[in-house]
Image 1 (cartoon, rainbow, N blue to C red):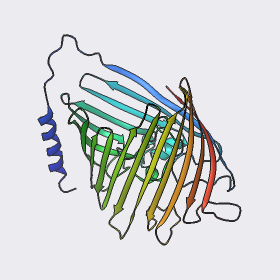
Image 2: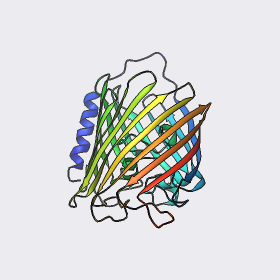
Image 3: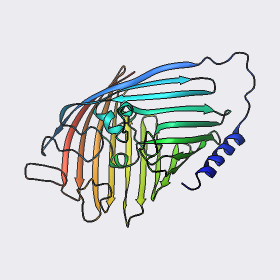
Image 4: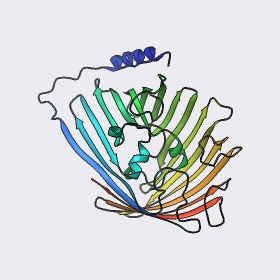
Length: 340
């Protein structure tokens, strides 16, 4: 990016502008070191298609009894600085860090250091998971176990530098200069991307652009009652080829039925322009998929059990079945997730 130097200068100026010296306190805060993480495993069964047919989405797509990943997060939080080392291992972890090349980096989901510049600004440098979208890599923080098409074909991770600014009690701004998407270890071609996120009262507007690619994303939701939450994600991505890109919208109503059991639905419509993602098998024109995913979430201590029914309906015959191919797929998943 030609203006990389100017952008970094702007980030530093904004950081210094927001810098405020904290008043001296009698006792320094004690630094903390923590270890957390999760382990997940699942069983997947199709109702009518071939046993190994699966939606063209990330994770949770292996047949029969299958493994997710082991996730260990090491974190150190000092008074003004800290770091996070987030390590993953297993099929889900391998898929999550597909942009890594070196063997030593193939288990690194996130690895970054940060500096609190006063009370309202944080500078972070390293590799961190994407700020776009409603869903994340860790199954602990997704209500549905299987993932959406929008998540699967958007960015997973970024490596670069970002500045987070607290603008008010209800709003914040993030600006980052990043390597090309999912180039986690280093920059492969000396080009950079710009990332921006503005949040207000739990609603997020996200932008990612560079190297002929741009994506704008809205992620948010509304707590309509003590037991009912309604989440929303909408995204649109395009590149410099004619009509290339994808778009989609997903709704996430979730209902708490008891202290230990909740029920959530994800309804997603995903459109792939000129088969940009390749999920529809090199379709000649625009293609789309509609999926409905109903997930239960039962919690007992640190264990979460998630039974899930998912129905996908595509405009192309992309799901294998006994007759060759089908434009729909109905499947059942039950997942066990243990977090610590």
